[in-house]
Image (cartoon, rainbow, N blue to C red):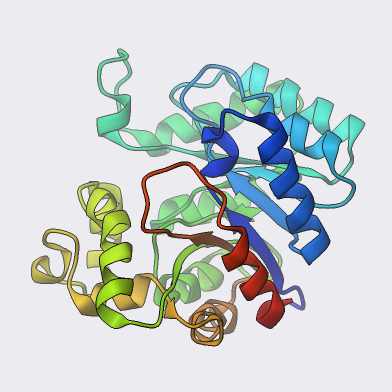
Length: 287
């Protein structure tokens, strides 16, 4: 496919208490030329109003949920939200749906043991509510969910994967479906400092079987997956270095078949901030 979209995946857009700060960041990304802003829909029954606020406060940039969990949201209400957004702002909102993780679903009375079946049921209900497949993507990792994203959605939005997975995903979903992996990056040229920042991110995700099982399919060993990950795994998952070096790491996903890469910039602090300087530097070499 000819598209090479450069997008942003940043938790700031949901976690920021200031809607004005979130909108200011979105306006800057739009000015820089980024294609879309992805962020989590959280764990409530309805999608956050922040998605609508960002679309209504900008002119061109897209907004997408990465992701809305099928265990918490109502398919009818989610479909109604997405359809209203499409009606009001055609082509600006993309609904990302995902099965989340057992540890995040546990305790709400839902049986997580059949996430694929749950996704099929959710899509059936969303279809019945009038949500067109071209207005949604699936957070797909394994072959069956990738096939579902090909057959019943506009494409796939993998998270926490390598370029090798991107290549497999492209093969599975075919040439005509959107493939938009999230890729976390660190703008830090010092190897020790960069990997330390990266491991603050990998430590949590390597405790989730959905991700580790997927990585094992590509030959990563228990030693690689232990703790916050081996250097080799960290380097494969998270491009780091100068803006040019990070761009070279992102290029591997484009070469593997990604239409759109949703860049998540990792920072060393715990505070909720938008890494504007990093996105400016990346825009200069990517857009």
